[in-house]
Image (tube, rainbow, N blue to C red; front, side, top):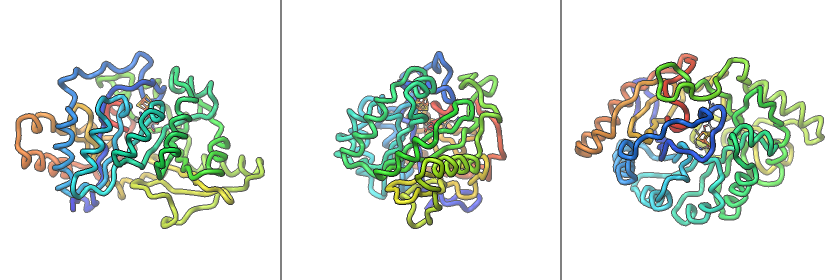
Length: 339
Ligand code: SAM
Ligand code: SF4
């Protein structure tokens, strides 16, 4: 079992398969995109699998594939199958914008991946297009439907709440009524945008004014639910919440099959329960989303032994900070870190 210097159990690894993406969400990437890393700076799938094997031997039991958009990475299905075969790995999950999921849902299930988070920030096609700078809501919703048809589960929808986007939260609440979809509203985080970074400005710019605290999200959901006659969301006890590896708090509208949840990195930060490490697509190990401290694992994977790789993992655990201290901005954006 891996623990860090503060006694937290670290059993969850998020792997960014690529820094590339087929969308350009306003809060994640600049309009012109981020300069893609040269091919030789990106870990090969074999290198990632070797790292994952070392991580599992150090106590990691859950892996989530993310990015950039993980489904644009060639060979993703075979990669999932090989990761899934690692002895000691309990589960593997995917975070995707969903636009390619219609194509990949069945092969992914066949390869052993059923847990999926689909990021959809608005159910209004025009707002979706504006947030993603050109994405089609119908593609993401087709991906979500395909996940259900392929038998994936649990299926979650991630929606980042940004005040100036004026998202209609009730539409998401309605989504949970008829099928077991778990919508998680995520507080907008101040990631990227620090001067001198590789992708400055990382997004159109986080401002405190755009941050909507979870308490307000819940108040808005309750008011909209009551006004629409679907009632108020009730807290779901931990044991009944959809299986998760993170800190979401869940609620259910009366009679709903699915749930709504909130993820509150800023308003109620959960650093004390943080259980994760991140591997970036270019082979850096990052112990905290909000800390720019990264350890080079690519060189070790290319020049070192398996034992050297395990040493790097222990070194990262030793540097994991106690908390993010409400820090604003990071040198690399979310698509590069692997959100
Ligand atoms: N492309 C995939 C997707 O969109 O799901 C995976 C990568 S994306 C960086 C992972 C998640 O990070 C998405 O749910 C996205 O909405 C979220 N995200 C990106 N920037 C964020 C920010 N500044 N604050 C909160 N969440 C953010
Ligand atoms: Fe791409 Fe996901 Fe970032 Fe949107 S949030 S630009 S889909 S990586």
